[in-house]
Each structure stands twice: as C-alpha cells, then as structure tokens.
Image (cartoon, rainbow over all chains, first blue to last red; front, side, top):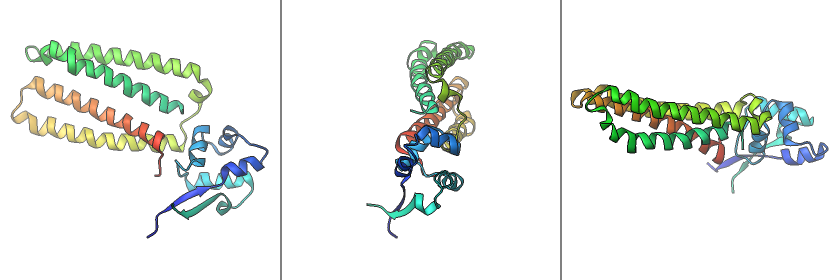
Length: 72
Length: 142
C-alpha cells in the first residue's frame, strides 16, 4: 500500500481570512498557538473534532482543509 | 516553544544533572547505604529535594516570562504527548520493578535493591520526559 500522509492548507486559509494569526485560530478551536503551528507543519494530526472545528472557522468543508495524499 | 515543552526540558536536564550527581558522586561517597541503609535516605533525599527546588524555581521563571502560555490549559496535543510519555515510561518502570522486586531479592542485599529501585524510577521519569520532548520536536501522529 502506498505511503500516505495528511496535508492541509490552513496557512492559505488563514491568509484569506485577513491574515488570521495562529493564536487567533487556536483560540477559536481551543488549542494553543504551538499546536496550530504543529498542525500546519504536518507535525501533528488533529482529532476529528478539531479538524471539523478548523473547517467551521473558515466556513469550508473538511476535505477543503485536509487532504490524504501519497507521500513523496 | 510550548510551555509544557520548556517544562519537560527543564525537568529532564535537571534530573540528569541531579541524579547523575547522586549515582556518580554522592551515592558512592555514602557507600550507597551499604553500611547504614539510612544513609540512602539522606544522600538521595538531599539530591531529590534540591532537584525539586530547582525545578520549582525554574518553572516559576518560565511561567513569569511566558505568562499567557503558562495560563493556557493543556490542549489535545499536550495531553496526547503526555499520555505517550507516561505509557512508555510506565513500561520502563514495570521492568525495573520486576528486576527489583522479583529477581534481586534472591541474590542482592537491601542497599542494592533500594538503589536499583531508585534508579528504575529515575530511568522511567527520564524516558517519560525524553519521549515528551521527542514528540514535541519531531511531531506526534497518534
């Protein structure tokens, strides 16, 4: 089975949301700024609940934020 | 760097220094309690108390310099990383306790058993903090 990893476009979505900061996003979804940074960098896979919260903040669908892509 | 990551760095660094001093210098100087078991209480107790004081003071300094981070509750990533560290540290502790409580009593004197138990606890805590730090640094994918 091909190796896959979770990628996301949160950085882009923050940019389009008036340069929302990581701290502001973190406050809205109930995690720390460092955790938002870790999610953006692909260093942490959020829980499904947090993933839905992120999509809610930007008013988009879950699959518009996260993708399950082949690595490399 | 996350507040809890800084605390883990502080705990790990001071732990390595403090218990390195005990097992490298203070313990041997006190004969590891070979003559009098009570010597272990004094020698290890002083090192453990000094370690606790340094960690407490260090944690206060870190909290004062990053008040907002310090006041933030642990989020899902902090909790997941803490669970991972505690789980792996627990296995180290269990192995240590089996050696100390099941194997050593058949052949070793009390002072060695006590010191081995202390070493197992220190190793388990060290592994716990090292896993926490690695998870913060290299990422966590539950």
